[in-house]
Every structure is written in C-alpha cells, then in structure tokens.
Image (tube, rainbow, N blue to C red; front, side, top):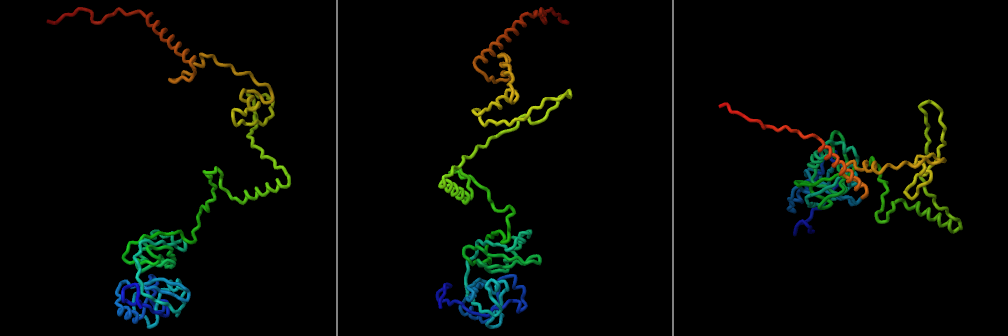
Length: 355
C-alpha cells in the first residue's frame, strides 16, 4: 500500500476500541485534542520512517460517517485500545468500546479560522482572545464541524469550528492564524428584524408585500366583472376651524360670539377660496370684507426699501432715490456756505531773539 506522503512510504491505518481518558484518571487531557495510543502504534510508525512532529491522525467512525483529526500525547495505552477526550467522542458519536479507525495524516498550517460560540455568555469574558490563545496551546489541529470546549473561570464554553483556511482541517502549531468570531447560536438581535420599507429608485414605488396588492387587484376585477362601478377615491382636503377660541374685553363687557367656520387651506396660489381671501384681508367669515388696506405713499415705500446698500425696486424707485440724495447734498453745501468765515491767522506776529 502506497500513500500520498512519499514514494514507497506505506500509510498507517489501525482500528482500536475507544474509551474516554477518564478511564485512566487523566482528566487534564480533556483540555486538548491529544489521545493515547498503544505502543504497537509507535513501533509501526517507526518502521514506516514517519518521524514528523507533531504526529497528526484522522479519526473516523465509519458506522456514523463522522471524522475528525487529533494529535498523540503518549503510546502507553493497552493494546487494541485508544483513549480519547470525551468531547471528541461526542463529536464522533462514539460510545465506550466502539471501534474507531486511525490514519496518519499531514495537515497544512492554518491561516484563518472562524469560530462560533454556542451560548452568548461567552461574550461576557473580558478578554476572549487571550483565553482562546491559552486554550489552543493544548491543540494540534482544528477540523470544520468540530465542537471543542473552553474551560474558563469554572465554566465550560462550547465553540463550533465553522470555517477554516486553507482547508477544512488545519494545523495550529507554530503558525500565525487569524481568528474570527460569528454571533453566538442563541444571540437575539435586540432591535429585531429590519422591516423598514424602502423606495425603489427605478420605479418610484415603495416596496411592500405583494399579497395585499394581488388581493386588491382580484377584488377590483371581480367588481368589474359583475358590472359594479368603483367610486373614485376622494382627495384629502386640509381644513381648519377659524376663530374657534374664546375672547374677553378689557372693560369686562360681553362680546358677540362668532360661530367658528371650517376653512379650506389652499395648497397653491391657484386654489384660493373666498373664505381664505376674507381672512387674509382682515374680514369676518360670513360677513362683509373690510376695506382694502391703504397703500403707502411712494416716498415712504422707497425709504423702507433703502434700509441698506441693496435697493430692491424698479427704475422709477432708483431715480427718485438718486434725486433725493442729490437734494440732500446740495442742501448740505448751502448750509456750509452760510457759515461765517474765521479771520484768525496763526503765527502772523513778529518775533525777537534773546541775544
């Protein structure tokens, strides 16, 4: 028999009865993936000149179709017996004394692995990276589909291996491996599923469940078939109650009450109702409109508009403004001419020296 491990190199295959490591009082082996094989396995491996370390094996339960990978710690088990960590026996669906097959294997060094905790209490660990690094020091390989156990702070955390690169089984000894975590299996999003409707930019419609649309279309079709006329939807009109509040006079006398009236709010300048026009002009609903507001004088309007450097108006307003400015300048010049001129001249007297 020849194998992929080298030309002329026979492949190691052996079958043993599986028992948990608790049978030999070695509970510390539950913290890793190493098994204990009989001395005959070491003898066969030596004859085949297999001296790669760490030695890795593919473990298969042919009855259940389950397989994983492991390392070996010692060759001191009884002949025909292998002792495995209990979590590994659970992954392989092995019972005490079941037959399991061992095959020597070589695995690539891992570059990436994605893990998923089974419970969200793993998120309560303050530094999960350090805990994971400490745990994986006891492991030689990881296989996709396996569930290993992290023992920390008197608690057990079950971790699933859901992805690995460059293969489904990788070695984790003397390698820099990137580790990623998936949300725990029992994790529930506190915000719930996203049910927000979004607008389709191509059609301008809002995506919504199509079941109701189909039901409405079917109902419309049935009504049309029976000859029934469907009423057109009525437009929504925005209205408000004008003068719906109460009032009081300062002299305490009673005032005549005005019944409130519903007025339609115009949505554009082309849809102005009579009632709305009365309100805008200061009238009373249902009565006569008040007088039109007096128009301000042209000069007053110009003065109001000239409050700043920018004047908003027509050519006439600008001409009047320039005329008023010239008149103001001319008046200022006339006032300056009327003022009497001073006859005093400085330093016009004679002077004498002390010498």
